[in-house]
Image (cartoon, rainbow, N blue to C red):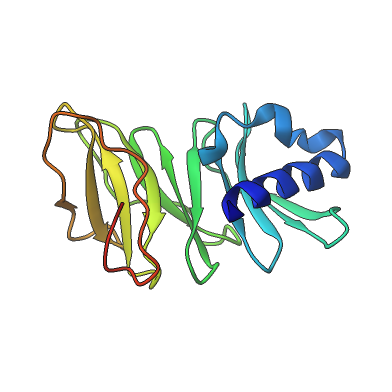
Length: 173
C-alpha cells in the first residue's frame, strides 16, 4: 500500500513539474519506477530515453534530473537501501549504477543465455535477488551486490518473478 501511494504521489509530482517528464504516460508498469524516501528522489524509466533519476522537493517540483546513460531499454529500477546505487534490468542482465551516475554502469549478471529482470536489494544492501529464465522457466536467484555468488533458489515449472525481501532480509517472497 505504501509503494502504491508513493507511486501515485510521484506520478502527481512529476505531472505537476511539467511536460518534460510526462511520467504517468511513459511508465511501462509500476516496476519501472522506484523511489527513495525521505530524500524525495525518483528513479524511473522514460520511453526512448532510458533510466532517469530526479530529485523532487516537497511541493512536487523537479529540482534536478540526471540521465544515467543506461540504455533506453533499461527497466525495473531499484534503489539500494543506502540510496547510493540503483540496480536495474537492461539487455537481459542486471546492472548497477551510482545514483549520482559517477563511475559508469556495472553489468552484474553478464548472462549468455536467458533474461534477468526484477532486481530487489536486500535490506542490508549486501545482496540482490532477481528473476532469470536462463533455464527455460523464470526462477529466483540471489547474488552479492557486486555480482558474485549467483545462486538459484527456486526450481519449478511455473514462472517466478518480482522477488521481495522480508524486512529482516531472512526470507524472499
